Length: 86
Image (cartoon, rainbow, N blue to C red):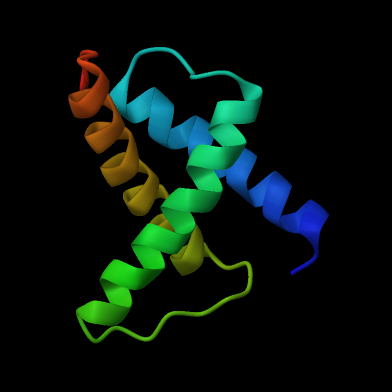
């Protein structure tokens, strides 16, 4: 995937995850970073559990990235003292 693909993928997954955890988004740049870090964390978690992880754009990779971004956002909210999950 190209760098623009990663940015677009990160934006979408970060936005969806921030809408799930909070009722509002985190901002464009933080959503992109959250989505990319979430994709890495989600891929690592699923790889640890023995599930094969694909590094191309698919529905399964999108769900893995969203789950990873939700985990990252919940940890971020716990560390900064913000409220999560509405």
